[in-house]
Image 1 (tube, rainbow over the protein chains, first blue to last red):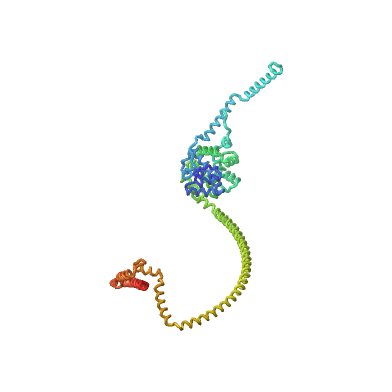
Image 2 (cartoon, chains in turn red, blue):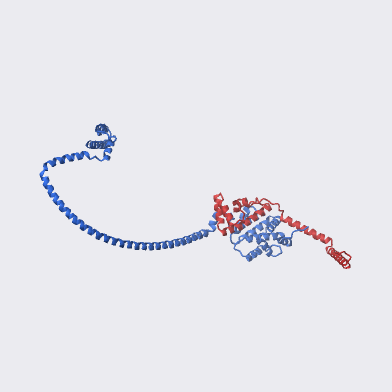
Length: 143
Length: 341
């Protein structure tokens, strides 16, 4: 399994015209023949594209999990679908971080007796509103 | 500080009684999603069968939907969890389950080839172990995945395509041929019409010509009659003249004979021989046109000495024969030239 898009230097979303141009301008005759066989028929390209998506997903997974040099990842597939390790941190670590963050927030909320704080804030707001209304009614404020 | 919302799989994992089981469930569901020719209900039942001993404690539906949406982050998280939590035995059982799920009775799909290998790498299972496990479970060795990026794959897996193409080409050709045949028929009809027209024209012309010829024949007949009359007159005159000449000849017969012989000699000398043959004869003797009689004789003697067959007596018979032929040619040329000069 090779990445024909990468080898032909076209994007996987390229339309048929761009791909046929790229295939026609390809210098490697064997690669051109293979690309013609795959891209000439729409069904074949669909089949190839689904597998291409899966394999590139696996390539990304391997890059993130540090498995780009595994014993089962060799040959054409490894050459074409291996990605450089990106700086995304481990999803599990991220999950643990988020969970601990959420837990700390919850704890703080509980420590400050959240419900009472909420009622106090609401009461203060209501009081300020009533005071402003009275002042308007009595004409104390210059209009 | 704001934190992003938890994704469905994260929530599932947090709610799960056993995170490893949930993560394994997602990976198995991922493998199942890439199995071909299996309905959604079959997949779910199969997953439930395989994971009957799991202690996750939640529904399978959300896991299947996550797997179907190909959520890469969820799969990554599951892989991380599985890698972190699985010992050697557990990882072997996971790969065992993955293989059974991937190849119940059918073939391993191309995507699952790569997924199984990814799982083996993830669980740090050596290729040898994977191969033996696969062979034990399915009875066939784990083959190298076929390559749909090559022409050979499509020639093996889509053989109908070429036949279909050939059929289409044939149909197109037949259509083309029919169109051609129609065009030819039309042309032939045109030609026939044209020929008929021409024939009519020719008939007309023939009639006209026949009429003309008839007229001419009549005219000729008239002319012939007049000519015949004239000829008869001339013959009568000639007969009279001949009678007169015979009378004169009988008078001076002896004198005329002498004069006739002299005339013939003069004519022989005066009439020039054909120039072509003379030049050819001269060239045989190695002379240019305009050579004198003396020169011709000298040349003949020299050539005869050179090409006499007796000179080649000591050599082969063939040489002698060739020399005699040459000598004969030279002699003929000389004789001819002696006559004409």
